[in-house]
Amino acid sequence: MLPEVKAEALRRLNYVEGHIAGIRRMLEEEKYCVDILKQTHAVRRAIQRVEALLLAGHLKSCVVEGIRDGREDQVLAELLDLYELADK
Image 1 (tube, one colour):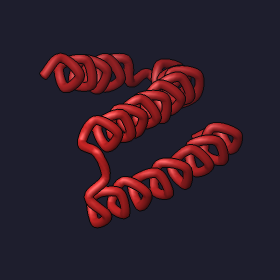
Image 2: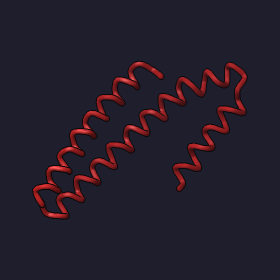
Image 3: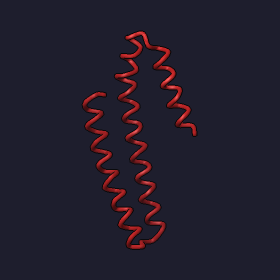
Image 4: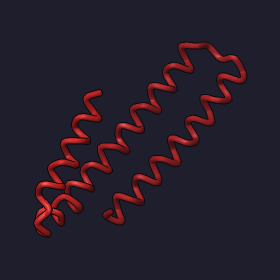
């Protein structure tokens, strides 16, 4: 994993953790449901951004290295698995 990708992913995950803690507090305090749902939507979007970041880093590093090392079939199978997972 590229060091800059790792650092950014960890930074974003810290944000997500804090946001989830805030949602938990909102639930405990019985805040308005729509407000809570808006926050859960924000968390889902933040996780999607982490996924996009990790995928871009994977494509720039691991995929390129795998192809250089002659592991094209393995690399393509892994990418297809990810594509199928995203489609569920």
